[in-house]
Image (tube, rainbow, N blue to C red):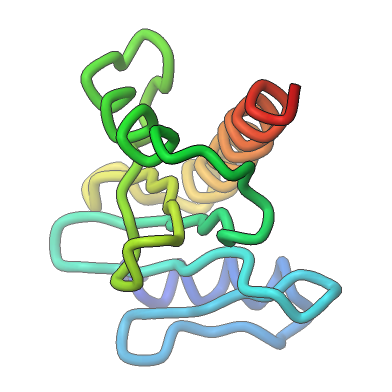
Length: 131
């Protein structure tokens, strides 16, 4: 099975046949209709990108700079990295899996690890800054 078909099967199984890659991308929303995650399959890797919407972030002029500086500390953020979206306000946490590592089991595990990293890092950012 090719990589795109494998990802589509995983998405279909996870969503009850609602989600599929279209032109190598799939954008997922949470139950409130807010963008939760973008999944992108490139020729070299599977990317999962989780935005932190500006409204969820504390008002801190240094926050974006501090998050981007975390990219220099893999011991803190592990296999993830931070970036800014095109609007320069939305913080995005990205994770990547090399295409050669894609299998049915690895994609499900990668999704769980990515969500766990997202939830932990976002909670730490929002809780730490909210104090």
